[in-house]
Image (cartoon, rainbow, N blue to C red; front, side, top):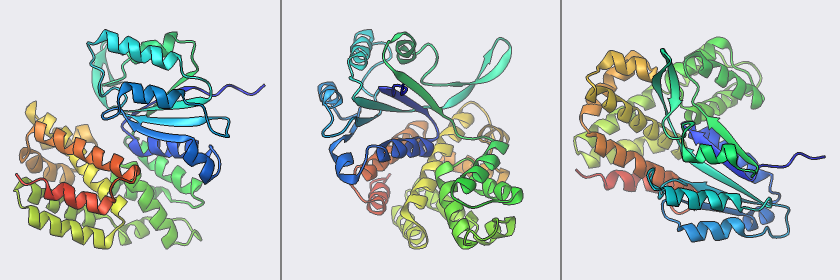
Length: 342
């Protein structure tokens, strides 16, 4: 007897790339392009009304066994203290038919917390006590919770080697370590670099550390730092010129990934600075190279915490717009910078 598929998928974490990859695998399983188009819906909890979400999720599939509904930011309009809205949403989840797969995409991050005298990493949003997690524990609905956590430390080396193997190639231990040193734990950027490096060796031999050095990302990383410096100083025209230089050299998705990572780091660095920390703490908490921490510290001081949060959310909106084909990524990045006149 075939195992029943989950009806509700709760995907959360800070590894957005792996989360998107999982969604891509589920989408591919819907069938050919025509079938997929008829049975796939993407919605954003920030803009879609509850009745719209419910209507789409309860719609029966067309000439297929199942339809897939991807809901980004499902908690955007549900306040943590609004129990009635929470109950309403849980009741909606309970009525979804088995012919629908509803995927909830929730951005989440870990933080260190002392529990029973030991420091542990816990999720900031979907804690065990969160109302959605309580629903998942009690419901009779087929529901699956999946954590997408960015690899840390040496785990990133292993992740790189595994990705290379899945792509039909191989990375030496030294090459994986060298690449991790450049991309830290940015899985999206690492995937692009892995593909480029495997293409460079034509899948005929393992990628070695010298290959990583030859095709280094460090120069582009410096350009991203320079571009953010110009943004912090309000030099929009100069920042746009640096962006164009990057786009002439690299794939727009790679450039966008580097910009998102930079501002994610700046948010964390700003929090550390506001709590009295410095370069050493930034390096330790973010698990990055010292020269990167040294560049982040003055950059983070160029923005307020609120400004960085606003910028990061605008980048997430741009990412969503690109996925839904509302705006081309290169044009969107230009507009993003142009609109940042301070």
